[in-house]
Length: 301
Length: 327
Ligand code: SF4
Image 1: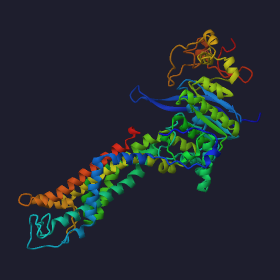
Image 2: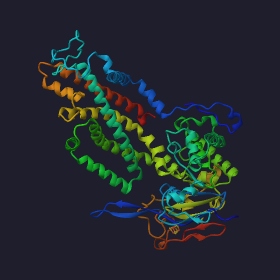
Image 3: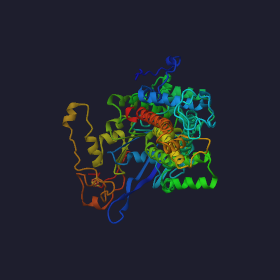
Image 4: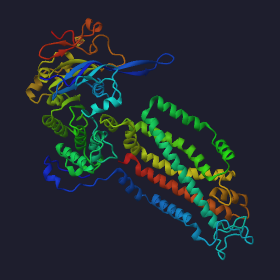
Protein backbone atom coordinates (compact mmCIF):
# COMPACT_ATOMS: atom_id res chain seq x y z
CA UNK A 1 0.00 0.00 0.00
CA UNK A 2 1.24 3.37 -0.90
CA UNK A 3 1.26 5.91 1.87
CA UNK A 4 0.55 9.39 0.77
CA UNK A 5 1.94 12.42 2.46
CA UNK A 6 -0.88 14.55 3.61
CA UNK A 7 -1.02 18.09 2.63
CA UNK A 8 -3.71 20.66 2.94
CA UNK A 9 -2.63 22.52 -0.12
CA UNK A 10 -5.25 21.53 -2.64
CA UNK A 11 -4.08 23.88 -5.37
CA UNK A 12 -0.72 22.20 -5.68
CA UNK A 13 -2.44 18.86 -6.06
CA UNK A 14 -5.28 19.82 -8.32
CA UNK A 15 -3.15 19.49 -11.39
CA UNK A 16 -1.99 15.97 -10.61
CA UNK A 17 -3.56 12.95 -12.19
CA UNK A 18 -6.06 10.85 -10.29
CA UNK A 19 -4.61 7.62 -9.02
CA UNK A 20 -6.48 4.52 -10.00
CA UNK A 21 -7.56 2.34 -7.11
CA UNK A 22 -7.60 -1.42 -6.95
CA UNK A 23 -11.04 -2.70 -6.10
CA UNK A 24 -11.58 -5.87 -4.14
CA UNK A 25 -12.91 -7.47 -7.33
CA UNK A 26 -9.65 -6.82 -9.11
CA UNK A 27 -7.74 -8.30 -6.19
CA UNK A 28 -9.94 -11.37 -6.28
CA UNK A 29 -9.47 -11.76 -10.02
CA UNK A 30 -5.70 -11.62 -9.61
CA UNK A 31 -5.86 -14.32 -6.97
CA UNK A 32 -8.16 -16.43 -9.11
CA UNK A 33 -5.83 -16.21 -12.09
CA UNK A 34 -3.01 -17.43 -9.88
CA UNK A 35 -4.93 -20.62 -9.12
CA UNK A 36 -3.81 -23.14 -11.76
CA UNK A 37 -6.57 -25.69 -11.29
CA UNK A 38 -9.23 -23.02 -11.58
CA UNK A 39 -7.69 -21.46 -14.68
CA UNK A 40 -7.27 -24.87 -16.36
CA UNK A 41 -10.87 -25.70 -15.50
CA UNK A 42 -12.09 -22.45 -16.98
CA UNK A 43 -10.18 -23.21 -20.16
CA UNK A 44 -11.67 -26.71 -20.36
CA UNK A 45 -15.16 -25.35 -19.73
CA UNK A 46 -14.57 -22.75 -22.41
CA UNK A 47 -13.58 -25.46 -24.87
CA UNK A 48 -16.60 -27.58 -24.02
CA UNK A 49 -18.91 -24.59 -24.37
CA UNK A 50 -17.32 -23.60 -27.68
CA UNK A 51 -17.67 -27.14 -28.99
CA UNK A 52 -21.30 -27.25 -27.92
CA UNK A 53 -22.01 -24.01 -29.74
CA UNK A 54 -20.07 -25.02 -32.85
CA UNK A 55 -21.43 -28.59 -32.86
CA UNK A 56 -22.98 -28.53 -36.38
CA UNK A 57 -19.65 -27.55 -37.91
CA UNK A 58 -17.50 -30.00 -36.01
CA UNK A 59 -18.91 -33.18 -37.47
CA UNK A 60 -20.24 -34.15 -40.88
CA UNK A 61 -23.26 -35.81 -39.30
CA UNK A 62 -26.50 -34.09 -38.28
CA UNK A 63 -27.61 -34.97 -34.78
CA UNK A 64 -30.88 -36.62 -35.83
CA UNK A 65 -29.78 -38.48 -38.96
CA UNK A 66 -30.32 -42.23 -38.67
CA UNK A 67 -27.85 -44.52 -40.44
CA UNK A 68 -29.70 -47.83 -40.70
CA UNK A 69 -26.55 -49.71 -41.61
CA UNK A 70 -24.52 -48.45 -38.66
CA UNK A 71 -26.62 -49.21 -35.60
CA UNK A 72 -24.77 -49.27 -32.28
CA UNK A 73 -21.31 -49.25 -33.79
CA UNK A 74 -18.16 -48.70 -31.74
CA UNK A 75 -16.01 -45.65 -32.54
CA UNK A 76 -15.29 -45.71 -36.22
CA UNK A 77 -12.87 -43.19 -37.64
CA UNK A 78 -13.42 -44.17 -41.24
CA UNK A 79 -16.96 -42.79 -41.17
CA UNK A 80 -16.14 -39.96 -38.73
CA UNK A 81 -18.15 -41.55 -35.93
CA UNK A 82 -15.52 -40.64 -33.31
CA UNK A 83 -17.72 -41.69 -30.40
CA UNK A 84 -19.48 -44.48 -32.32
CA UNK A 85 -23.24 -44.56 -32.94
CA UNK A 86 -26.23 -45.15 -30.70
CA UNK A 87 -28.96 -47.76 -30.75
CA UNK A 88 -30.81 -45.85 -33.46
CA UNK A 89 -27.76 -45.49 -35.66
CA UNK A 90 -27.16 -41.79 -34.89
CA UNK A 91 -23.70 -40.31 -34.47
CA UNK A 92 -22.84 -40.21 -30.79
CA UNK A 93 -20.21 -37.44 -31.02
CA UNK A 94 -22.67 -34.94 -32.39
CA UNK A 95 -25.32 -36.09 -30.01
CA UNK A 96 -22.99 -35.64 -27.06
CA UNK A 97 -22.29 -32.07 -28.18
CA UNK A 98 -25.99 -31.36 -28.59
CA UNK A 99 -26.49 -32.88 -25.19
CA UNK A 100 -23.88 -30.46 -23.87
CA UNK A 101 -25.90 -27.60 -25.34
CA UNK A 102 -29.02 -28.61 -23.48
CA UNK A 103 -27.24 -29.50 -20.26
CA UNK A 104 -25.18 -26.33 -20.10
CA UNK A 105 -28.09 -24.18 -21.10
CA UNK A 106 -30.31 -25.73 -18.45
CA UNK A 107 -27.52 -25.31 -15.93
CA UNK A 108 -26.85 -21.67 -16.71
CA UNK A 109 -30.40 -20.49 -17.30
CA UNK A 110 -31.88 -22.23 -14.28
CA UNK A 111 -29.04 -20.91 -12.15
CA UNK A 112 -29.60 -17.43 -13.58
CA UNK A 113 -33.29 -17.61 -12.68
CA UNK A 114 -32.46 -18.81 -9.19
CA UNK A 115 -29.84 -16.08 -8.86
CA UNK A 116 -32.15 -13.21 -9.72
CA UNK A 117 -35.03 -14.43 -7.58
CA UNK A 118 -32.89 -15.70 -4.73
CA UNK A 119 -30.72 -12.61 -4.38
CA UNK A 120 -33.51 -10.04 -4.42
CA UNK A 121 -35.71 -12.19 -2.19
CA UNK A 122 -33.03 -13.08 0.33
CA UNK A 123 -31.61 -9.56 0.51
CA UNK A 124 -35.06 -8.07 1.05
CA UNK A 125 -35.95 -10.57 3.77
CA UNK A 126 -32.63 -10.18 5.54
CA UNK A 127 -32.57 -6.41 5.29
CA UNK A 128 -36.02 -5.70 6.62
CA UNK A 129 -35.90 -8.49 9.19
CA UNK A 130 -38.60 -8.92 11.80
CA UNK A 131 -42.01 -9.97 10.63
CA UNK A 132 -41.32 -9.51 6.92
CA UNK A 133 -38.31 -11.79 7.24
CA UNK A 134 -40.35 -14.34 9.15
CA UNK A 135 -43.14 -14.53 6.62
CA UNK A 136 -40.77 -14.60 3.64
CA UNK A 137 -38.54 -17.30 5.07
CA UNK A 138 -41.44 -19.47 6.26
CA UNK A 139 -42.64 -19.43 2.66
CA UNK A 140 -39.21 -20.69 1.61
CA UNK A 141 -39.41 -23.43 4.24
CA UNK A 142 -42.78 -24.51 2.90
CA UNK A 143 -41.44 -24.62 -0.65
CA UNK A 144 -38.52 -26.66 0.60
CA UNK A 145 -40.76 -29.22 2.18
CA UNK A 146 -42.67 -29.86 -1.05
CA UNK A 147 -41.36 -33.04 -2.65
CA UNK A 148 -39.43 -31.77 -5.65
CA UNK A 149 -39.92 -34.80 -7.89
CA UNK A 150 -43.62 -34.76 -7.26
CA UNK A 151 -43.69 -31.09 -8.15
CA UNK A 152 -41.83 -31.64 -11.42
CA UNK A 153 -43.90 -34.66 -12.42
CA UNK A 154 -47.04 -32.68 -11.68
CA UNK A 155 -45.86 -29.83 -13.91
CA UNK A 156 -44.98 -32.27 -16.67
CA UNK A 157 -48.35 -33.91 -16.48
CA UNK A 158 -50.20 -30.62 -16.59
CA UNK A 159 -48.15 -28.79 -19.21
CA UNK A 160 -46.59 -31.64 -21.12
CA UNK A 161 -42.86 -32.22 -21.56
CA UNK A 162 -41.17 -28.99 -22.47
CA UNK A 163 -37.61 -27.80 -22.11
CA UNK A 164 -38.68 -24.38 -20.75
CA UNK A 165 -40.67 -26.10 -18.07
CA UNK A 166 -37.49 -27.80 -16.93
CA UNK A 167 -35.76 -24.44 -16.60
CA UNK A 168 -38.61 -23.06 -14.59
CA UNK A 169 -38.95 -26.11 -12.39
CA UNK A 170 -35.23 -26.23 -11.63
CA UNK A 171 -34.93 -22.50 -11.13
CA UNK A 172 -37.97 -22.51 -8.88
CA UNK A 173 -36.30 -25.02 -6.62
CA UNK A 174 -32.73 -23.76 -6.68
CA UNK A 175 -33.57 -20.19 -5.68
CA UNK A 176 -34.65 -21.38 -2.27
CA UNK A 177 -31.12 -22.21 -1.16
CA UNK A 178 -29.82 -19.07 -2.81
CA UNK A 179 -32.34 -16.98 -0.90
CA UNK A 180 -31.26 -18.58 2.37
CA UNK A 181 -27.58 -17.94 1.69
CA UNK A 182 -28.18 -14.34 0.66
CA UNK A 183 -30.40 -13.72 3.66
CA UNK A 184 -27.75 -15.01 6.03
CA UNK A 185 -25.08 -12.87 4.42
CA UNK A 186 -27.36 -9.85 4.43
CA UNK A 187 -27.98 -10.24 8.15
CA UNK A 188 -24.27 -9.97 8.79
CA UNK A 189 -23.60 -7.19 6.28
CA UNK A 190 -26.46 -5.01 7.46
CA UNK A 191 -24.97 -4.82 10.94
CA UNK A 192 -21.79 -3.27 9.60
CA UNK A 193 -21.31 0.41 10.16
CA UNK A 194 -21.29 1.50 6.56
CA UNK A 195 -24.94 0.51 6.31
CA UNK A 196 -25.70 2.72 9.28
CA UNK A 197 -23.68 5.44 7.59
CA UNK A 198 -25.91 5.12 4.54
CA UNK A 199 -29.01 5.38 6.73
CA UNK A 200 -27.55 8.46 8.36
CA UNK A 201 -26.94 9.94 4.91
CA UNK A 202 -30.64 9.58 4.17
CA UNK A 203 -30.25 6.86 1.54
CA UNK A 204 -33.50 4.98 0.91
CA UNK A 205 -33.92 1.34 1.88
CA UNK A 206 -34.03 -0.17 -1.59
CA UNK A 207 -31.09 1.91 -2.70
CA UNK A 208 -29.17 0.60 0.30
CA UNK A 209 -30.06 -2.97 -0.67
CA UNK A 210 -28.93 -2.58 -4.25
CA UNK A 211 -26.01 -0.21 -3.74
CA UNK A 212 -24.51 -1.54 -0.52
CA UNK A 213 -25.90 -4.92 0.48
CA UNK A 214 -25.93 -6.87 -2.77
CA UNK A 215 -22.40 -5.95 -3.91
CA UNK A 216 -21.15 -7.05 -0.51
CA UNK A 217 -22.92 -10.41 -0.48
CA UNK A 218 -21.99 -11.21 -4.06
CA UNK A 219 -18.81 -13.12 -3.18
CA UNK A 220 -20.46 -16.13 -1.56
CA UNK A 221 -23.26 -15.88 -4.10
CA UNK A 222 -20.86 -16.28 -7.01
CA UNK A 223 -19.22 -19.25 -5.34
CA UNK A 224 -22.57 -20.85 -4.69
CA UNK A 225 -23.60 -20.13 -8.26
CA UNK A 226 -20.68 -22.03 -9.74
CA UNK A 227 -21.64 -24.93 -7.52
CA UNK A 228 -25.31 -24.66 -8.47
CA UNK A 229 -24.68 -25.01 -12.19
CA UNK A 230 -23.32 -28.58 -11.91
CA UNK A 231 -26.04 -29.40 -9.44
CA UNK A 232 -28.71 -28.29 -11.88
CA UNK A 233 -27.02 -30.23 -14.67
CA UNK A 234 -27.06 -33.30 -12.47
CA UNK A 235 -30.69 -32.83 -11.57
CA UNK A 236 -31.59 -32.43 -15.21
CA UNK A 237 -29.68 -35.63 -15.99
CA UNK A 238 -31.56 -37.33 -13.21
CA UNK A 239 -34.90 -36.15 -14.59
CA UNK A 240 -33.88 -37.33 -18.04
CA UNK A 241 -32.78 -40.64 -16.59
CA UNK A 242 -36.29 -41.02 -15.26
CA UNK A 243 -37.65 -40.17 -18.67
CA UNK A 244 -38.87 -36.71 -17.64
CA UNK A 245 -36.23 -34.72 -19.48
CA UNK A 246 -36.04 -33.30 -22.98
CA UNK A 247 -37.83 -34.98 -25.84
CA UNK A 248 -36.37 -36.94 -28.75
CA UNK A 249 -34.68 -36.28 -31.06
CA UNK A 250 -33.28 -33.50 -28.85
CA UNK A 251 -31.07 -34.91 -26.20
CA UNK A 252 -29.11 -34.09 -23.09
CA UNK A 253 -26.29 -35.77 -21.23
CA UNK A 254 -28.77 -37.32 -18.86
CA UNK A 255 -30.73 -38.86 -21.70
CA UNK A 256 -27.57 -40.19 -23.35
CA UNK A 257 -26.30 -41.64 -20.09
CA UNK A 258 -29.57 -43.33 -19.40
CA UNK A 259 -29.59 -44.88 -22.87
CA UNK A 260 -25.95 -45.85 -22.49
CA UNK A 261 -26.54 -47.43 -19.11
CA UNK A 262 -29.10 -49.77 -20.62
CA UNK A 263 -26.58 -51.21 -23.07
CA UNK A 264 -23.56 -50.89 -20.80
CA UNK A 265 -22.50 -54.46 -21.49
CA UNK A 266 -21.60 -54.72 -25.13
CA UNK A 267 -21.78 -51.01 -26.04
CA UNK A 268 -19.78 -49.37 -23.28
CA UNK A 269 -18.89 -46.37 -25.48
CA UNK A 270 -22.51 -45.25 -25.34
CA UNK A 271 -22.11 -44.75 -21.60
CA UNK A 272 -18.47 -43.75 -21.36
CA UNK A 273 -18.48 -40.70 -23.66
CA UNK A 274 -21.52 -38.84 -22.33
CA UNK A 275 -20.75 -39.81 -18.74
CA UNK A 276 -17.14 -38.74 -19.18
CA UNK A 277 -18.18 -35.35 -20.58
CA UNK A 278 -20.57 -34.84 -17.71
CA UNK A 279 -17.95 -35.82 -15.14
CA UNK A 280 -15.30 -33.52 -16.64
CA UNK A 281 -17.74 -30.61 -16.70
CA UNK A 282 -18.81 -31.16 -13.12
CA UNK A 283 -15.20 -31.41 -11.98
CA UNK A 284 -14.32 -28.20 -13.76
CA UNK A 285 -17.21 -26.27 -12.24
CA UNK A 286 -16.20 -27.49 -8.81
CA UNK A 287 -12.59 -26.43 -9.32
CA UNK A 288 -13.68 -23.01 -10.52
CA UNK A 289 -16.00 -22.74 -7.53
CA UNK A 290 -13.20 -23.66 -5.16
CA UNK A 291 -10.86 -21.20 -6.83
CA UNK A 292 -13.45 -18.45 -6.54
CA UNK A 293 -14.04 -19.25 -2.92
CA UNK A 294 -10.36 -18.89 -2.16
CA UNK A 295 -10.06 -15.77 -4.27
CA UNK A 296 -13.04 -14.04 -2.68
CA UNK A 297 -12.32 -15.20 0.85
CA UNK A 298 -12.67 -12.13 3.04
CA UNK A 299 -10.12 -13.52 5.50
CA UNK A 300 -7.40 -12.79 2.98
CA UNK A 301 -8.17 -9.12 2.77
CA UNK B 1 -26.06 33.28 23.06
CA UNK B 2 -28.64 32.15 20.54
CA UNK B 3 -31.18 29.45 21.23
CA UNK B 4 -30.25 25.79 21.09
CA UNK B 5 -30.27 23.98 17.76
CA UNK B 6 -30.92 20.74 19.55
CA UNK B 7 -32.82 20.07 22.73
CA UNK B 8 -33.13 16.62 24.16
CA UNK B 9 -35.75 16.13 26.85
CA UNK B 10 -36.05 13.10 29.06
CA UNK B 11 -34.90 10.79 26.28
CA UNK B 12 -35.28 7.08 26.93
CA UNK B 13 -34.18 4.15 24.85
CA UNK B 14 -35.19 0.77 26.21
CA UNK B 15 -34.46 -2.46 24.41
CA UNK B 16 -36.62 -5.45 25.26
CA UNK B 17 -34.28 -8.26 26.19
CA UNK B 18 -35.30 -11.85 26.63
CA UNK B 19 -33.91 -13.35 29.81
CA UNK B 20 -34.15 -16.93 30.93
CA UNK B 21 -36.09 -17.95 33.96
CA UNK B 22 -39.43 -19.58 34.49
CA UNK B 23 -41.02 -21.63 31.80
CA UNK B 24 -40.80 -19.17 28.93
CA UNK B 25 -38.35 -16.61 30.21
CA UNK B 26 -39.50 -13.04 30.32
CA UNK B 27 -38.86 -9.76 28.66
CA UNK B 28 -36.93 -7.20 30.62
CA UNK B 29 -36.28 -3.70 29.33
CA UNK B 30 -32.63 -2.88 29.00
CA UNK B 31 -32.53 0.80 29.80
CA UNK B 32 -29.67 1.90 27.60
CA UNK B 33 -30.62 5.54 27.91
CA UNK B 34 -32.89 6.52 30.76
CA UNK B 35 -34.13 10.06 31.00
CA UNK B 36 -31.38 12.15 29.45
CA UNK B 37 -31.88 15.88 28.79
CA UNK B 38 -29.52 18.45 27.39
CA UNK B 39 -29.32 21.41 25.02
CA UNK B 40 -26.81 22.09 22.33
CA UNK B 41 -26.13 25.56 20.96
CA UNK B 42 -24.79 26.27 17.48
CA UNK B 43 -21.06 25.78 17.20
CA UNK B 44 -20.84 24.10 20.55
CA UNK B 45 -19.17 20.79 21.31
CA UNK B 46 -20.77 18.63 23.92
CA UNK B 47 -18.56 15.81 25.16
CA UNK B 48 -20.29 12.69 26.41
CA UNK B 49 -18.16 10.46 28.62
CA UNK B 50 -18.73 7.25 30.46
CA UNK B 51 -17.53 3.68 30.62
CA UNK B 52 -18.38 1.34 27.79
CA UNK B 53 -21.92 0.14 28.17
CA UNK B 54 -23.17 3.36 29.72
CA UNK B 55 -25.40 4.07 26.73
CA UNK B 56 -23.43 6.89 25.17
CA UNK B 57 -23.42 5.43 21.65
CA UNK B 58 -27.10 4.61 21.92
CA UNK B 59 -27.77 8.18 22.99
CA UNK B 60 -25.92 9.56 19.97
CA UNK B 61 -27.85 7.33 17.61
CA UNK B 62 -31.16 8.08 19.26
CA UNK B 63 -30.57 11.81 18.74
CA UNK B 64 -30.12 11.11 15.02
CA UNK B 65 -33.13 8.77 15.02
CA UNK B 66 -30.95 5.91 13.86
CA UNK B 67 -32.37 4.11 16.87
CA UNK B 68 -35.95 4.90 17.70
CA UNK B 69 -36.27 6.42 21.17
CA UNK B 70 -38.74 4.72 23.49
CA UNK B 71 -39.85 7.98 25.03
CA UNK B 72 -38.85 11.60 25.32
CA UNK B 73 -38.36 14.43 22.87
CA UNK B 74 -35.63 15.39 20.49
CA UNK B 75 -36.22 18.94 19.33
CA UNK B 76 -34.24 19.95 16.27
CA UNK B 77 -34.44 23.62 15.31
CA UNK B 78 -37.70 23.93 17.17
CA UNK B 79 -39.35 20.83 15.74
CA UNK B 80 -39.81 17.51 17.50
CA UNK B 81 -38.22 14.71 15.51
CA UNK B 82 -38.45 11.81 17.96
CA UNK B 83 -40.21 8.88 16.35
CA UNK B 84 -40.52 10.46 12.91
CA UNK B 85 -40.65 7.88 10.14
CA UNK B 86 -37.83 7.49 7.68
CA UNK B 87 -39.44 9.64 5.01
CA UNK B 88 -40.17 12.58 7.30
CA UNK B 89 -36.69 12.29 8.75
CA UNK B 90 -34.93 12.34 5.40
CA UNK B 91 -34.75 16.08 4.72
CA UNK B 92 -33.33 16.59 8.21
CA UNK B 93 -30.55 14.10 7.63
CA UNK B 94 -28.92 16.66 5.42
CA UNK B 95 -28.16 18.67 8.53
CA UNK B 96 -27.16 15.98 10.99
CA UNK B 97 -24.39 13.50 10.36
CA UNK B 98 -22.37 10.91 12.20
CA UNK B 99 -18.76 9.75 12.37
CA UNK B 100 -18.14 6.21 13.50
CA UNK B 101 -15.69 4.46 15.74
CA UNK B 102 -14.29 1.93 13.31
CA UNK B 103 -13.09 3.93 10.31
CA UNK B 104 -12.68 1.03 7.91
CA UNK B 105 -15.95 -0.68 8.84
CA UNK B 106 -17.86 2.52 8.25
CA UNK B 107 -16.80 2.68 4.60
CA UNK B 108 -18.34 0.38 2.01
CA UNK B 109 -15.39 -1.77 0.86
CA UNK B 110 -16.76 -2.00 -2.68
CA UNK B 111 -16.93 1.73 -3.24
CA UNK B 112 -14.27 4.20 -4.16
CA UNK B 113 -13.56 7.13 -1.90
CA UNK B 114 -15.31 9.38 -4.38
CA UNK B 115 -18.45 7.28 -4.24
CA UNK B 116 -18.36 7.08 -0.45
CA UNK B 117 -17.93 10.80 0.09
CA UNK B 118 -20.26 11.64 -2.78
CA UNK B 119 -23.10 9.48 -1.56
CA UNK B 120 -24.78 12.09 0.69
CA UNK B 121 -24.45 14.66 -2.09
CA UNK B 122 -25.96 12.29 -4.58
CA UNK B 123 -28.78 11.46 -2.23
CA UNK B 124 -29.81 15.03 -1.63
CA UNK B 125 -29.01 16.43 -5.08
CA UNK B 126 -30.07 13.67 -7.46
CA UNK B 127 -29.71 15.97 -10.46
CA UNK B 128 -26.21 17.20 -9.70
CA UNK B 129 -23.92 16.77 -12.72
CA UNK B 130 -21.15 14.24 -12.25
CA UNK B 131 -18.39 16.77 -12.75
CA UNK B 132 -19.75 19.14 -10.13
CA UNK B 133 -20.21 16.25 -7.71
CA UNK B 134 -16.65 15.10 -8.19
CA UNK B 135 -15.43 18.64 -7.79
CA UNK B 136 -17.20 19.05 -4.48
CA UNK B 137 -15.92 15.69 -3.28
CA UNK B 138 -12.38 16.69 -4.19
CA UNK B 139 -12.70 20.00 -2.36
CA UNK B 140 -13.90 18.14 0.70
CA UNK B 141 -11.06 15.63 0.47
CA UNK B 142 -8.59 18.50 0.38
CA UNK B 143 -10.29 20.06 3.39
CA UNK B 144 -9.84 16.92 5.48
CA UNK B 145 -6.21 16.68 4.45
CA UNK B 146 -6.40 13.96 1.81
CA UNK B 147 -5.07 14.51 -1.62
CA UNK B 148 -7.94 14.83 -4.13
CA UNK B 149 -6.20 12.58 -6.61
CA UNK B 150 -7.00 9.66 -4.29
CA UNK B 151 -10.64 9.93 -5.32
CA UNK B 152 -10.64 6.63 -7.22
CA UNK B 153 -8.99 4.58 -4.51
CA UNK B 154 -10.73 2.07 -2.29
CA UNK B 155 -10.97 2.20 1.51
CA UNK B 156 -8.70 -0.81 2.05
CA UNK B 157 -5.87 1.09 0.39
CA UNK B 158 -5.80 3.65 3.19
CA UNK B 159 -4.51 3.65 6.75
CA UNK B 160 -6.89 3.87 9.71
CA UNK B 161 -6.30 7.58 10.16
CA UNK B 162 -6.87 8.27 6.48
CA UNK B 163 -10.06 6.19 6.56
CA UNK B 164 -11.29 8.32 9.42
CA UNK B 165 -10.55 11.42 7.38
CA UNK B 166 -12.70 9.93 4.63
CA UNK B 167 -15.43 9.38 7.25
CA UNK B 168 -15.11 13.01 8.30
CA UNK B 169 -15.29 14.13 4.67
CA UNK B 170 -18.47 12.14 4.16
CA UNK B 171 -20.04 13.66 7.26
CA UNK B 172 -18.97 17.19 6.28
CA UNK B 173 -19.72 17.18 2.58
CA UNK B 174 -23.24 18.55 3.02
CA UNK B 175 -22.05 21.14 5.58
CA UNK B 176 -24.34 19.83 8.32
CA UNK B 177 -25.25 21.73 11.45
CA UNK B 178 -24.57 18.83 13.78
CA UNK B 179 -22.17 15.91 13.73
CA UNK B 180 -22.34 13.12 16.23
CA UNK B 181 -18.84 11.72 16.68
CA UNK B 182 -19.12 8.26 18.16
CA UNK B 183 -15.70 7.44 19.62
CA UNK B 184 -14.10 8.74 16.44
CA UNK B 185 -10.53 8.26 17.59
CA UNK B 186 -10.57 5.33 19.99
CA UNK B 187 -9.73 2.84 17.23
CA UNK B 188 -6.74 4.89 16.09
CA UNK B 189 -3.11 5.10 17.15
CA UNK B 190 -2.46 7.72 19.79
CA UNK B 191 -0.28 9.68 17.39
CA UNK B 192 -3.13 9.84 14.86
CA UNK B 193 -5.81 10.67 17.43
CA UNK B 194 -4.55 14.20 17.90
CA UNK B 195 -4.56 14.83 14.14
CA UNK B 196 -8.19 13.82 13.79
CA UNK B 197 -9.25 15.84 16.84
CA UNK B 198 -7.47 18.89 15.50
CA UNK B 199 -9.04 18.34 12.10
CA UNK B 200 -12.49 18.31 13.67
CA UNK B 201 -11.73 21.48 15.60
CA UNK B 202 -10.43 23.24 12.50
CA UNK B 203 -13.50 22.25 10.53
CA UNK B 204 -15.70 23.45 13.36
CA UNK B 205 -13.92 26.80 13.35
CA UNK B 206 -14.47 27.07 9.60
CA UNK B 207 -18.02 25.75 9.24
CA UNK B 208 -19.43 26.38 12.71
CA UNK B 209 -21.24 23.08 13.15
CA UNK B 210 -22.07 21.68 16.57
CA UNK B 211 -20.51 18.45 17.71
CA UNK B 212 -21.62 15.76 20.06
CA UNK B 213 -18.38 14.07 20.90
CA UNK B 214 -18.73 10.64 22.49
CA UNK B 215 -15.71 9.05 24.09
CA UNK B 216 -14.51 7.12 27.08
CA UNK B 217 -11.20 8.95 26.94
CA UNK B 218 -11.37 11.98 29.20
CA UNK B 219 -8.16 13.53 27.96
CA UNK B 220 -9.50 13.59 24.40
CA UNK B 221 -12.90 14.91 25.44
CA UNK B 222 -11.28 17.64 27.48
CA UNK B 223 -9.36 18.88 24.48
CA UNK B 224 -12.29 19.29 22.13
CA UNK B 225 -15.39 19.90 24.26
CA UNK B 226 -16.97 23.09 25.51
CA UNK B 227 -19.30 21.26 27.83
CA UNK B 228 -19.19 17.72 29.12
CA UNK B 229 -21.86 15.29 30.17
CA UNK B 230 -21.00 12.32 32.35
CA UNK B 231 -23.18 9.26 31.81
CA UNK B 232 -23.51 6.20 33.98
CA UNK B 233 -25.86 3.34 33.18
CA UNK B 234 -27.87 5.49 30.83
CA UNK B 235 -28.36 8.33 33.29
CA UNK B 236 -26.77 11.74 33.49
CA UNK B 237 -24.54 12.07 36.55
CA UNK B 238 -23.25 15.53 35.87
CA UNK B 239 -23.18 18.19 33.16
CA UNK B 240 -20.82 21.11 33.35
CA UNK B 241 -18.56 23.38 31.36
CA UNK B 242 -15.33 21.70 30.60
CA UNK B 243 -13.15 23.75 32.93
CA UNK B 244 -15.64 23.58 35.77
CA UNK B 245 -15.87 19.85 35.45
CA UNK B 246 -12.16 19.25 35.43
CA UNK B 247 -11.41 21.77 38.15
CA UNK B 248 -14.31 21.08 40.46
CA UNK B 249 -16.23 17.93 39.69
CA UNK B 250 -19.13 17.55 42.08
CA UNK B 251 -20.38 14.07 41.45
CA UNK B 252 -18.44 11.20 43.06
CA UNK B 253 -18.39 9.38 39.72
CA UNK B 254 -16.99 12.37 37.82
CA UNK B 255 -14.40 12.80 40.56
CA UNK B 256 -13.30 9.21 40.19
CA UNK B 257 -13.11 9.46 36.40
CA UNK B 258 -11.16 12.68 36.46
CA UNK B 259 -8.78 11.49 39.13
CA UNK B 260 -7.83 8.64 36.80
CA UNK B 261 -6.71 10.98 34.01
CA UNK B 262 -2.92 11.31 34.04
CA UNK B 263 -1.59 14.83 34.55
CA UNK B 264 1.38 15.73 32.36
CA UNK B 265 3.24 17.32 35.28
CA UNK B 266 4.98 14.49 37.20
CA UNK B 267 4.95 16.30 40.54
CA UNK B 268 1.26 16.98 40.40
CA UNK B 269 0.72 13.48 39.11
CA UNK B 270 2.44 11.99 42.15
CA UNK B 271 0.69 14.32 44.55
CA UNK B 272 -2.79 13.72 43.28
CA UNK B 273 -5.16 11.33 44.91
CA UNK B 274 -6.56 8.61 42.74
CA UNK B 275 -10.04 7.49 43.58
CA UNK B 276 -10.35 3.88 42.60
CA UNK B 277 -13.87 2.66 42.09
CA UNK B 278 -14.76 -0.57 43.78
CA UNK B 279 -16.60 -3.31 41.94
CA UNK B 280 -17.77 -3.66 38.37
CA UNK B 281 -20.39 -1.92 36.35
CA UNK B 282 -23.72 -3.46 37.46
CA UNK B 283 -25.80 -5.21 34.82
CA UNK B 284 -27.92 -2.65 33.00
CA UNK B 285 -30.71 -5.26 33.09
CA UNK B 286 -30.91 -4.94 36.86
CA UNK B 287 -29.72 -1.44 37.72
CA UNK B 288 -29.45 -0.59 41.42
CA UNK B 289 -32.47 1.06 43.02
CA UNK B 290 -32.32 4.73 43.86
CA UNK B 291 -29.06 6.17 42.63
CA UNK B 292 -27.66 3.84 39.98
CA UNK B 293 -24.13 4.63 41.08
CA UNK B 294 -24.62 3.66 44.71
CA UNK B 295 -23.09 0.17 44.44
CA UNK B 296 -19.73 1.72 43.69
CA UNK B 297 -20.04 5.09 45.35
CA UNK B 298 -17.68 5.77 48.25
CA UNK B 299 -20.18 8.25 49.70
CA UNK B 300 -23.32 6.15 49.44
CA UNK B 301 -25.76 6.45 52.31
CA UNK B 302 -29.10 4.78 53.00
CA UNK B 303 -31.06 7.46 51.25
CA UNK B 304 -29.26 6.68 47.99
CA UNK B 305 -30.86 3.25 47.79
CA UNK B 306 -34.36 4.62 48.21
CA UNK B 307 -34.48 7.88 46.39
CA UNK B 308 -33.28 8.57 42.88
CA UNK B 309 -31.32 11.83 42.83
CA UNK B 310 -32.57 14.41 40.34
CA UNK B 311 -30.26 16.65 38.34
CA UNK B 312 -29.81 19.72 40.50
CA UNK B 313 -28.38 23.06 39.55
CA UNK B 314 -25.05 23.68 41.21
CA UNK B 315 -24.54 27.10 39.70
CA UNK B 316 -22.45 28.26 36.75
CA UNK B 317 -24.19 25.88 34.37
CA UNK B 318 -23.21 22.86 36.40
CA UNK B 319 -25.82 20.22 37.09
CA UNK B 320 -25.31 17.24 39.36
CA UNK B 321 -27.42 14.20 40.17
CA UNK B 322 -26.29 13.28 43.67
CA UNK B 323 -27.87 13.66 47.11
CA UNK B 324 -24.59 14.67 48.66
CA UNK B 325 -23.00 16.98 46.13
CA UNK B 326 -23.00 19.88 48.57
CA UNK B 327 -20.75 18.12 51.05
S1 SF4 C 1 -26.63 9.85 45.33
FE1 SF4 C 1 -25.56 8.69 46.86
S2 SF4 C 1 -24.82 6.92 45.79
FE2 SF4 C 1 -25.42 8.34 44.25
S3 SF4 C 1 -23.57 9.39 43.81
FE3 SF4 C 1 -24.57 10.60 45.36
S4 SF4 C 1 -23.76 9.84 47.26
FE4 SF4 C 1 -23.21 8.37 45.72
